[in-house]
Image (cartoon, rainbow, N blue to C red; front, side, top):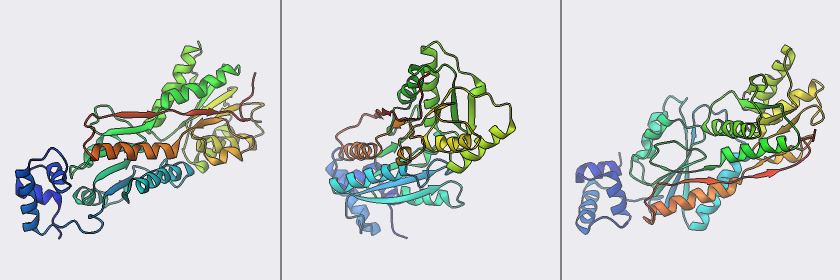
Length: 335
């Protein structure tokens, strides 16, 4: 087995981060420690072989359940932004997939932590707080993308979820809607939690109350949200508000399909606002009013932030929230 940074750190009695910084000639490591690290590395037979001889960023796609992180235009655009920025900066991007439903997921994470790379970028959309301690084992800088955790020591780049949902809900209120429901994901992620806070804040500040009858929990997949919405409609006794705000476009698409099949007209009977601005929004009938997320830009910002950490120019932990834009189309009616 090839020696790892952890092996060198143990033999030299220093931290993995110190080893990584020494091997990459970064500031903050004395000449004496550098010489010791290089000496131990040579004795152990450690070498920065391909792709280790290049500047490398490892991108981890983390899945807790896979209901949200999947092969959708949202994540394709996000990854495209990351790849493009890595190329522009002269870095190679290596992709790793971690799915905690796999039996060997801990081994996969261990291999990631023991491998050499200049920085670690984690797609943290589905991550929970307890997952954070799994990463950062080799001392390289870490940036989380599309999630945020309190008391987190890693930098985070994410959507400004509260303000975005506030704006989407306010748009419905400004169009005269007072009975506004919520198409809420039945699967929890932090992003959806904060979007609901924005929805509730918008209602409260406009003197309206959230009605639990109008909060519908749907699986966050197109087929799942369609199936769940259809089941609710067929069950009878479902009170219908004049408008819905949805956790994301996928939930909105599935719900719209079920509503239309049951003869509910959009926006004549019910208005809908989505979230993400996926390409499908332009071809749904009616075209979907939604919150535009600057996906490629988020990926680019995350890479740039990671490079700042890698180059030792910034030690302060940052939470970077990327603003959104309301895109108005035909799915909202003025009442």
